[in-house]
Amino acid sequence: MCWTRANAGTSRKALELKAPIDGIITERNSTAGELIGKDTQIYTISDPTDLWVLAEIKERDIGAVCVGQEAVFTVLAYPGEEFHGKVVLLGNRVESESRTLEVRIAVSNTDGRLKPGMFADVEISTTAIKDALVISDTSLQSLEDEQIVFVALSDIKFEKRVIKIGMEQHGRMQILEGVKENERVVTEGSFILKSELLKGELGEE
Image (cartoon, rainbow, N blue to C red; front, side, top):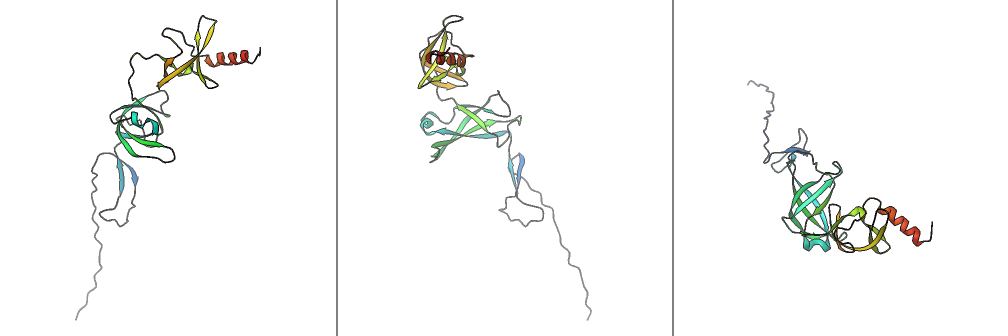
């Protein structure tokens, strides 16, 4: 009887992986040589041209926000520049500690400038007001429990006005009471006028 010895070889076959969407790999969850199954998540792929901004709105504002509303936001990477999106989903649960609701905003990012993980300051347009009287928020000063502005009566004379404000958007505030149309409201330098006002009230020179 004759015996022969054979070396057992291991056959390896390269597998081609196909992603269900176009995009870039943002996370690798497996390593070379690792045994994987049909349910193993190997890579995480995202499409950078369409992003979501996740914002939190206060509980008192929930009734004013709905799907389809326009949103404007800024990011630290591009100071002074505004980006636009649209509300596509409202959360179904208010956070117990912060008393806020999560809102999802869809954003087009075809130029790739926005990156996942960035922090954003978001404003959602809830109501359109026609013929509103508005001022810059740099005009507004707080004095005890009042909101005040200074109206220029002449080039050297100014008058303090207690005002009532309404909505705020993009650095502008709606004036409900205290200032009339065509009156000149001080913007730059309002803090200096407030300081001079306090000195007068305190009897200082």
